Length: 241
Length: 190
Image 1 (cartoon, rainbow over the protein chains, first blue to last red):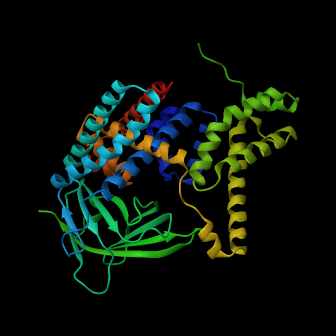
Image 2: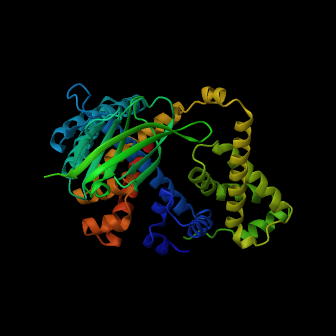
Image 3: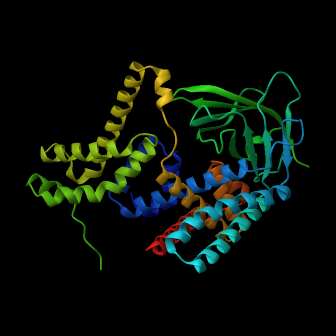
């Protein structure tokens, strides 16, 4: 195994995502165990992925509070969501800056870094806006009622779902999205609540490309690793106009 | 000038000859990779325990001459680590089955340590800066869809009209930017 092959087949990122076939994974592990360059790239990819996911989950959870409509879902168009995301990102950005500034002990560094963080936060929010991300807040299904409706932006845009329920019982959750025929269209393990009552997930709009009813089941993972039902969300998806 | 590394077979030979420095060299050389394997396969376990056990067992086996193909020392170390992880999971599940599940659940604390929280904050901040530095909306979308939405590479390339090479370059550039920011942050602390 050589580095051209690793780069060409995108082995670093596929390994980090856990999507390499068993034999290829074993071969790659045997290579990188004695390859400091690959170990460095694997660490960078892992931490970058973690940073992006944590950031996206927090931003999704920081979408506007549940004070208005009585309906369980509220659409926040990208142009409305961007300032909220920027504000959330700004608060997050300032905290680590403060820690760093104390370490550096320099008021000038504080100003420069905060400005850079602020600029980065705005750019990210603008990026999400340009990418056409739409945020929806979903409440769990209780009894029979009209399903929540969401308008799916055209692919390749993103759909951010903020799921509101009591997520304080488990440390990690599994989400399974099924279409109206009961087929699994998307699944994700190891989701961590961004607050005791919210989990943010980001879906490529292409997963919701078929109009119809969808059910999103959240199962909590207990200390023994078993998954137990935690909440179910249902919504009807249709293409955005 | 290129630094020539000792071949794995030579490392094994020196350990068999009783050279202590060769044992330290083995641990230093393979430590980073073993940590990656453990983190990837068993993210929620006590990685330090498995890490220590791996090197203890590897060194014992090397000293006893149990490495059949010294040139493939990496593969040997990975298999030892994997077996220990499997063993760890078996022991943990048996232990949990014997204990009172309810009490275990109460004692279980999912909270990350303060250091973990600090590192998470740092990674979030840097990830946002990496995004902000991406040259185009399309590149940002690649990162979002690949790392956050877990979309397939082929699907992303098709949707965005990207070649496989361009896709790889976007991820590679993002990692490099992340590395540069980490180094910048580290040098600021010194």
